[in-house]
Image 1 (spheres, rainbow, N blue to C red):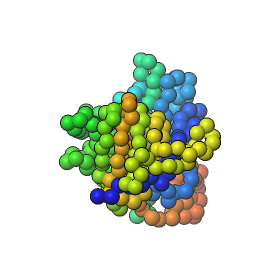
Image 2 (cartoon, rainbow, N blue to C red):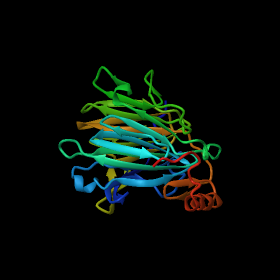
Image 3 (cartoon, rainbow, N blue to C red):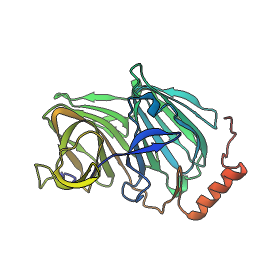
Image 4 (cartoon, rainbow, N blue to C red):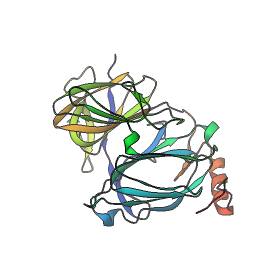
Length: 305
């Protein structure tokens, strides 16, 4: 087994989205090959309702899949195909925008005002860019959780891991999406197929992701308060870890344990033409999408919003 080295270690950056929602972006709107097949990852954890209540009103998507994972609070959603629902703590929504969909997401806090969750965008290959839209809404109770003898816990949102399969299926990027908690001081290894791109996103506690040649952690540049500093990889909250080639990752949890998302997928390796929530393969396809929005033909099935 070969441990994947760390090729990038960065902190998620504050940004505004929707109608003024404050969130942190781990990656997105940069080099589309860096995390292929994934395009964007947002952390929308907030403690103050005024920072998120404006939500994400009606907006278009085409050519991608969006994956929403809620930890606290709720998200009311609706779309142009007539789908309506509410995501609660631990729930997942996997939306295949395909040929086009209009969508809205309106977050609400829990009794303490907390609204915690994540959204990941996955690209679609050219053969599926114009496929029919679909939803997979998965309640928390359907997400398998595996607890190992040492207390390590893994929720399998999508893909197969430790003999269990997540409830979301039929995704073009063939992803594996895991929510992993490792107790304080424990060192664990997690297998990842060699052909996949992979990243981890830490959102509680801290830990060290190590490669085979540097057991104390890899010395890297990390952005801290806008400055690049050299640090050993003792990663903490809102840290993105991008991995190189190999077939497993290793993590040693810090004194308070660590909780992170481990995401991997098969690269698509196709040209990307990107304009906001529309991701196609060519500029001409983007121009056509904008034209479709303007002339009312963006939605290929009956709109009801």
